[in-house]
Length: 305
Image (cartoon, rainbow, N blue to C red; front, side, top):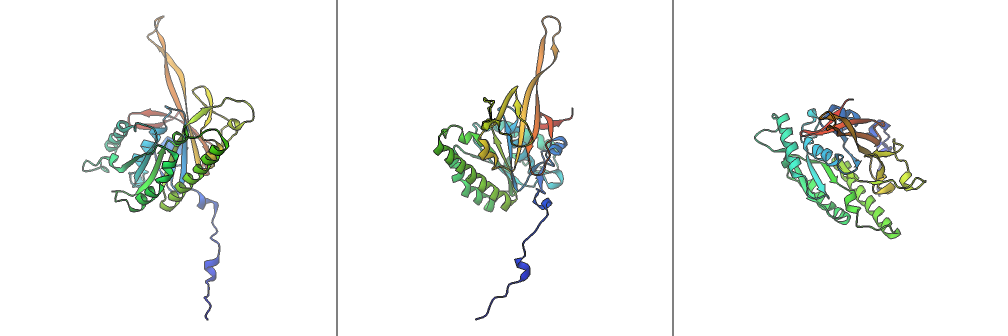
C-alpha cells in the first residue's frame, strides 16, 4: 500500500494582512461628496444597511445604486445588473424611469441604441420574511444562470423591517424565531456576496426612543451617541440581533429649518426646507464621517456646506 505524500506548502495557513479583509471594489453613487463619505461607494462582498425614517431618501439611494451599477468600472460602476427585492408597495416605477432618463442623458455614449437602464434592474416583490428565505434558492440560481445582458452583482432589499413589522409578537418564542430568520437570511446574503462578489444594500426603518434608562433602546452601536431625526431621538428597528448581521450601517437624518421670509410685511410667512444628512454609524473600512445631501430630479447629490 502506497502512502499519499502531501505537499507541505498546501498545509500552510493562508495568512493575510488586515488590508486584505477590507472591501476593494465599490459601486459609486455618482457623487464625489457621497462617495468620499462612504470611502468610494457601496462595497462589494459586504452587506450595507441604510437606516432612516420614512421620507428621508432610503429608496432614492437604492434606485440610484441599482442603475449606476450598470456603468463600467472607469465611471464608478460594476458593469452589472441589479436584483431589487421590494417589500413596500407600490414599487416607485415612475421615479426609477426618471432616474434612468437622467442617467441616459448623462452618459449617452454608454447607453446606445436606445438601451434603457431600467432593463438592467430586475424586480421581485416579497411579502414575508419566510418568503424571502424561501426564494433564496431561486436567487442563487438567478445569480448563477441568468442570461442577462450584464451579470447581476447588486442585490437590494427595500425594506427589511417591513417583513418583520407585523408578523412577530413580543414573546420569547417569536423573538427567538425572528432572530433565527435574521441569521439565516443574512447568512445567505453574505454567502452570495462573497461567492459572486456582490454589493448588497438593505434598508431598515426606525422607532422612537421612549425610555431614558439603560434599556435596549439606549444601547450605543457605532460612532453616534444617539440618532436624531425630525427633532426626535430614534433607534434602528429590528434591534441588536439584526445589527450584528450587517457589515456597515449608514443613517439618514432629516430636519426642517426656516430658510427665510416669503412675501414680506405682515402677510409674509416663513419658508421651511428640509436638511438631510448621511452619517456613517459603523463600517470596518470607514471613520465616523457625515455629509449633507439633497434629492433632485436627477438623483441624490451631496452638498458642501
